[in-house]
Image (cartoon, rainbow, N blue to C red; front, side):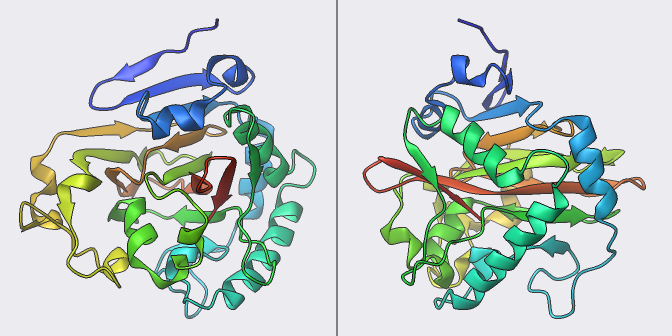
Length: 286
């Protein structure tokens, strides 16, 4: 069997080429959920020509008016800022999927490529998008653009799973024990923009506001606000190369993205991954 290097510092991340991942981690999603490893860095998910072509088309500066993401430019809807009625979210998902097909035209279709690679990691399970009650499909991903000095704040994916209205329908379909994050690097910054992982895990924290806690970031650890104490804990940083796919245990591990430095933007496309309730399927969405 082909072996892949595993980063054994704070967390165990295995690095493997996309062409080899089916041989090395045929049940990689379950391996992460079962804590055999904490994450995978899959290099050459997309080639450099493909990512450069996509990045060359993402020329917008600044967010859309009324964006729920503040000053950060995000293409596509996100379930964690959706209301309990996901109708608007699903309509925007359809629009984003059409935009994404055009964006990746001339190279490999992103959705098809994502399903292909997730299928190699699924242990033979079906991989699909979740559906709303009316049959409308969720979005497979969203695109995030960080300009100079912008960053993504600390969070667990489990905050969204347990604390936000948009997830109320989805939580009846997915296994709640783990909630993975994934992203593909399209453009890496000159400096900064690292994924920062903390030695703080979801089960160690408390959340008094289960209704809105996901976005208010009101979690505590041993009764102390996370924001005040997190920098006292050990950290690990990851800076994947453009074209790499990262899948990691973002539901369990506290993480953030550090501020971008230099003129080159950090652009990623990604979302979340989870098993269905009986682990017979793998769902992915954003």
